[in-house]
Amino acid sequence: MKLGIESFSTRNSGLDPLGVLDFAAELGVGGVMFELSPFRSFRDDDLKQIRHAAEEKGLYLEFGMGSILHWHPMAEKGRQLLAEAGHDTNVSEAQIVIHHLHVAKKLGSPILRCVVGNFLTRDEGHDMVRLADQAVAILREACCVAEDLGIRIAVETHADFTVREHASILARVNSPAYGFTVDCANLAFDLDNPLRLAEIVAPRAWTTHYKNYRIIRTRDGLALENCALDEGEIDIVAIAELLAKHNPDINLNIEIHEQYAPFRMDVLRPAFWAKHPSPPGDGLAWYMEKAWNKTPLESLRSDLPDGAKTWEIENRQIRQSACWAKKALHHLLAE
Image 1 (cartoon, rainbow, N blue to C red):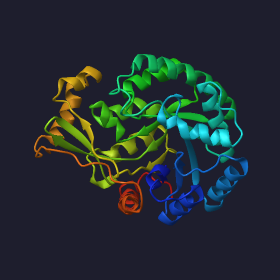
Image 2: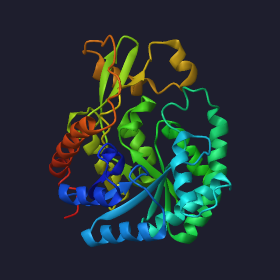
Image 3: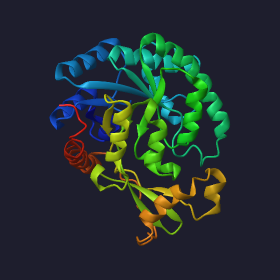
Image 4: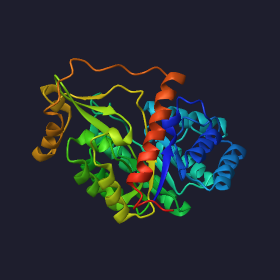
């Protein structure tokens, strides 16, 4: 098990992929999981340069695309980068995933992280059963190619589907290449005990977003507040220990996005339950216990602006989190 960073944490820094690798080396972590925000190009020469830089620094490199659904905003940048590099993007959604698999292969990444939707998808009123059917069809086709390439597809627990819905999709795709990017904090969107949810996905956990949330109380219920790893209330050490039992070589990729306002979970409003499945009672109680003695917040802060001031805050939290994790996870991390 190695500690690394997820490149989304550096999105306000202005760093390109080579700069992110330099930052990881300076931070003293073992590697980087790249999503798309630092990339300017998918051209072969540029991918080769990124791969060489990671190898030269002795850093692992994992690669991720955005959404597998063509209409989702998180799919746009990947298509643009592919088109600019000469790939045909007037193809099926599965073929776009396959294009990204080839990018991962060129970068030397053993996995391709992807998402289906995000935490807004259910609230926007999408038919989650229909989206699950679409995801199964796309991923079945893509996983056949992934198996041939020796790459694993790691679908993120991205607060779109519940963990139990993700497990159902896994069973339907039925490929040894299919598994998960376990976002340790996003498990909380299910309003069930995060450790219990981690147990469901741990056998097929290929990689992680290592993140934490504070549980805060609002007039309408709860909210999940971004923070440094050591300031959150999810037992992410226990989650790392659980994941290590199933995959001792899994990487823990620190993700920080203090920029964003707390995520509302308005469990005291009937409208919330009209779109969200009911969690187990003892799962919801886990969150209520965390928040019960806190003063309800009348309002939540807004997102912070893009740019240098936000990077100053998030840079500090990345460093604080890395320092904490090296100590708290010393018994798990490879030398």
